[in-house]
Amino acid sequence: MDILNSPHIPPSLIGALTLYPFLFITLGRMQAVKNILPPKADTQKHYHLCNKIVASVHSTIMTCTGLYLLLTVDWSKNDISTYKTALTPFLVGLELGYLTQDTAFEFYQRAKFGVGSNLILFHHVSVILGSVYYLYALTIDNPGPYFIGMLSLMNMSTPILHFRWVLQSNGRTFVNSKLKRFIDTALMITYFWCRIFGNWWMGVAIGAKLGMTWYEAPFHIGKKFTITTTTMFFMNVVWWLILAKQWLRSVNSFYFTKQVAKKSE
Image 1 (cartoon, rainbow, N blue to C red):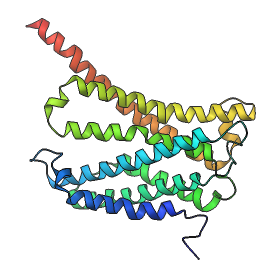
Image 2: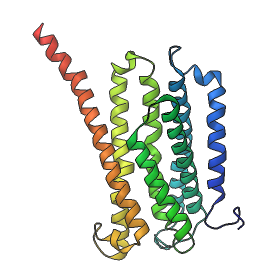
Image 3: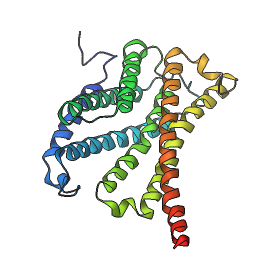
Image 4: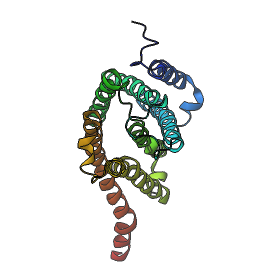
């Protein structure tokens, strides 16, 4: 089997599996990257930072390419689920390659530092399985560029999330600032727009195309879309609810708890 010419294994998959680990290793050796965190930061923190920079680079590429795909195709003339474009397997291959290496790093982090998130691991494994299913079983017959483009936009909130982590890692000056509340609010709104509203809008667009309601549409577009979008939707709702809970607690403690304390003095 010629792997490079296989329609089920896009070059972006091989590129991601090669370039992202190379970027990670390169970042780990750069003093400028180490200087981003406070001097007291340990090895695990620096490892985490490199991982977040790679994730932000990947998310930016996915978001920009997904936007280009969605904005350059005339959906009034081309079918939403069957129009063929080279960008579709590129995006899926890139996402699969990134998540595969990131999942490997997650296992390595658990083994070396004894820390890790079960929710993130479950999320990665689920998307990996969905991407593999898509590439190996259905790429040729029904590439679904509209869905892949919309799903790519889910990466839009990732750089904000990681930027917040970097600022938080630099001490309590940021934690107790209005800037943190602003970034938290931007993250919550962006996350909702690109990961929850975007999923709902896919149903609206397909429903309009097929002449049915948004909640009926997923059952008429093929199992790969129904399974992927439904799973992603519920996982993203859980993530957003966690963010919203943290945001409410942060806003309450910053704007209201202090005022009560002042009145009692």
